[in-house]
Length: 124
Image (tube, rainbow, N blue to C red):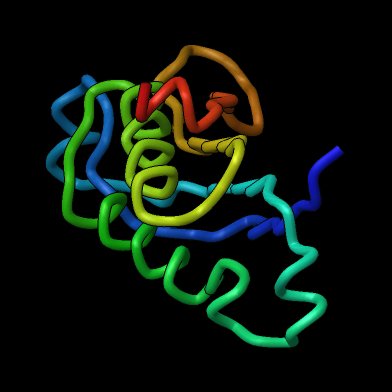
């Protein structure tokens, strides 16, 4: 079982969705990211460049959520996974995106999409 670095409940403001008010007014999105990788070298050396710099990962996620626009949460999650798996030495990534303001006729806390991608899924 690989090691894990988790960024939990990050909040960003974005313009994702299919309805006009979602793409015009925007809303908050909450994101969890689990990065699975081997942390042994980082542990042995205590050096940041031997692990994943989660500050950089946070900034990359913030950038894609706040500057891109997607109709589907699934597309947003996949693009985040592709960006992180391409830019960092990870074996696998799990991304959960929660959208609390959902245009439905009913009561619910949020809609959540979860994707699970391996390096091979993205890089071939």
